View 1 (cartoon, one colour):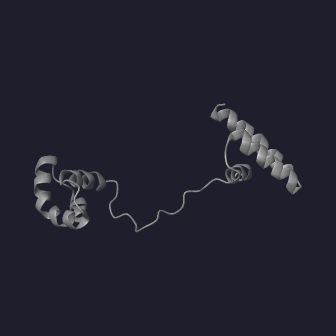
View 2 (cartoon, rainbow, N blue to C red):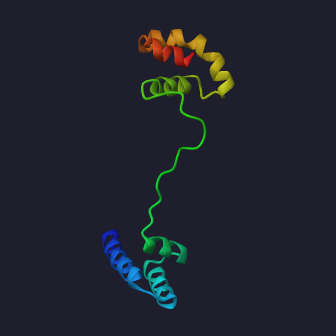
View 3 (cartoon, rainbow, N blue to C red):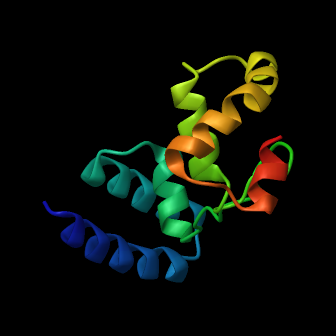
Length: 115
């Protein structure tokens, strides 16, 4: 059974599930879907309810480096041999002149963020 077939089947079962009134009928339908699709009962319930997981807010602190700085940051991190953050911070001022000589001068905004 292809993914398309599964989604068509699941859409039909969703309609049936919403129309059912009694708990025993819904329980039977949940059991049928879980056996047919080979998923757990909890997953079957989530599929039949039609809830989709919305991507939440990214955990942790806000990102410091944007799309312009990140490639330089990653390349330097790799060239330095993947040091820990403390050593990376100490090595950046020493390595940045050599990096700029080889890869070209960095814009002022990028340079100030990296230092």
